[in-house]
Amino acid sequence: MSVHKQWKKVTVPQIRESKGGEPIICLTAYTSLTAVLLDEHVDLLLVGDSLGMVLYGMDSTLGVSLDMMIGHGKAVMRGARKSCVIVDMPFGSYQESPESAFRNAARVMKEVGCAGVKLEGGVEMAETIRFLVQRGIPVLGHIGLLPQSVNTAGGFRSLGRKDKEAAGIIEDAKAVEEAGAFATVIEGTVEPLAREITEMLSIPTIGIGASPACDGQILVTEDLVGLFSGFKPKFVKRYAELGAAIEKAVEEYAGDVRARRFPTLEQCFGVKAPESEAKTDESKSEAPETKPEPVDTTVIPMGLRSTSFGK
Ligand code: KIV
Image 1 (cartoon, rainbow, N blue to C red):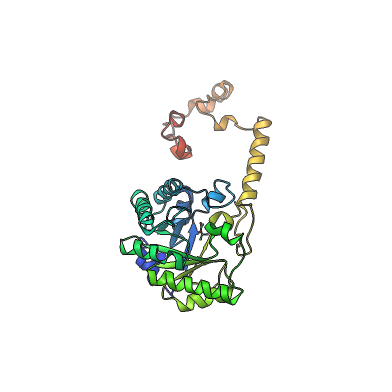
Image 2 (cartoon, rainbow, N blue to C red):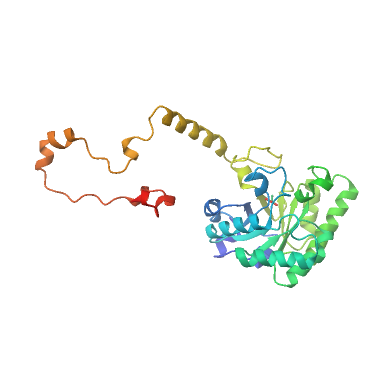
């Protein structure tokens, strides 16, 4: 944890000023639950359009809508107290013109209350980035591998092996910086190129499949905890196997329900003690009367507290 310890709520200028300092810790979050779990440990939470693939099972991020991003952005904001929340602009919401990009990005900022937006693209997006930044919308750039351009790129592969390709990505990096982005994601490039760009830019770089030299790192949280098993890119390190743990838990639950081991009376409300227990234990009946224990509401799941089930 870097920026986090020094400031209460991490702001865009603070991220911008962390260039060359302690690594900026970033992760994706799509839900309030995840945001609550991550908030303490990260500087920046990205509501990434990767949610289309991770949460909705889409083949790419192209089907993600502005409304989906706004809905998930709001959920993340409810769970994030300290981290800087940035929302991805989905495919089709910013490419047409700087004006339409501003309209859509302003909607995201107003409705979500996030600190800024991210959009993919370098030289071709510079005018749009400038237009947004000059009008009060902080922009996180995204260069290198651009998932929203999967169709024109013809698939996903690491970039920058050839000189011409590397030179193009360097131009993108410069363009994004000059346009006023406060930082840029570098995705899926060869390591020396991401290192070179990091050294060259005055704004922080946030790497994913890029280089340890980047000013910050980001991963899709579900990849990191082993929840998304669609595929595991080379650049992902798994820190947990939650998918396998969930499957095991659910298998056990199903077995218990099938065998009538769940629920037991312990998990039921209004269960009277068997009469035999109440009558036969004389020592108990002679014992001084004690007040009944107050009901421990903490055992009632949060989602049920406001319903009659919790009473
Ligand atoms: O959509 C996303 O999650 C992203 C990150 C992987 C950088 O763009």
